[in-house]
Image (cartoon, rainbow, N blue to C red):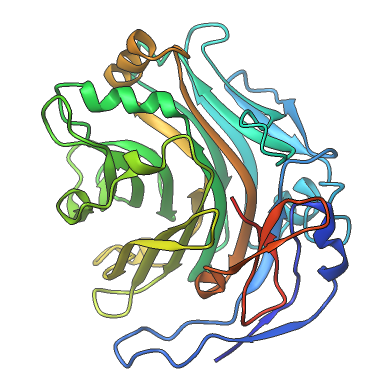
Length: 366
C-alpha cells in the first residue's frame, strides 16, 4: 500500500533539499497473516547537530534538549515546537539515576570514531544508584495521548566496545535495556503497567557472548510476564556490532496475540540488514482496558541495567563506565520499517547515506 511521507528530514545538511517533498513509496503487498498497517508520517528527526542543545531542568536528575537542528531547517526537527508541543507524542526529556556527583550524564559530543558523522548524543554511566541498585540514562517521550497505535523509530546506535567485558561476567545478564514502550502506565501501581523491553543480555557463564532480548511484562514487583524472546540460540549476537555504528529500527503495532506486531532489525553501514525479531504477538495488556489505548510512553534511547552490571564494567573496562552513542533519530507515526534497508549512496562530502530504492527518503548510513 502506498505510504505518503509527509515530512522528510535527515539529520545532515546534504539532505535538506528533500525535506519539503511529498514522496510516495510502495512497500508491497503484505502477507495475509500480517496485520494491516497505517501510512507513515515523519513526526520528528534530529542528528544532534548545532542548534540542538542540552539544558538543565528544575529536577536535579533530569535534562532536556532544546533548539532546532540547523542541519535540517525545513524538517520537523525543533525539539520544543515539533516534539514537546506535539499534540500526540508527549514531552521529551533525559533522566539519569545516580547519587554520585558526575556519576552519570548525557551530552552532545563529537563522534568518537572520527568517521565524519558530526555531533552525536552520548549516554555515560559510571556510578549507579546505591539505593535503587540500578542505574540509568534514558530519553523519555512521556505523556502521549491514546491513539498512538503504530509507530516506527529508527536511530543510529554505537554500543561502546568496552561493553564486551560483560561476556566475562560469570552471572547471567537478563536486562540491559536499550528501548522501552509503555501503554498508559500508572507508576504507583504494581502489576498494572504493560511494558515492552528491548535490550541485550547473556547466558550464565564466563565467555558467553551478548545477545538480544525482548519481553513484555507488567512492570513492577509481582507483575506477570507475558512473553519473552532472545537470540542466543539463533546465533544473532549483539557482541558482533560492538564499536560499530548501526541503525536500530523498531516497528510497533498495537494489537492482541493475532493482530499485534513488533519488528526489530539493525542495518549496517553497507546497507545490509539483520532481522532481530519479527513477532506477531500481544503488544497491549490482554485484560486491562486502561492498558489498551496504544503507546503513551516511550524510551527510544535508553541505558538501564543492574548495579552489578555497571560495577563489572567500571571495574574491568578501560573507559570505566557504560557508554552508548546515538545519532540520527527518526520517529514516525505508522509503518516506516520497510524503508530500510537502503542502497548505500555517497554524498558530496564523502559520507554515506541511505537511499531506499522505493523512495526519495534519505537517512544517514551508520
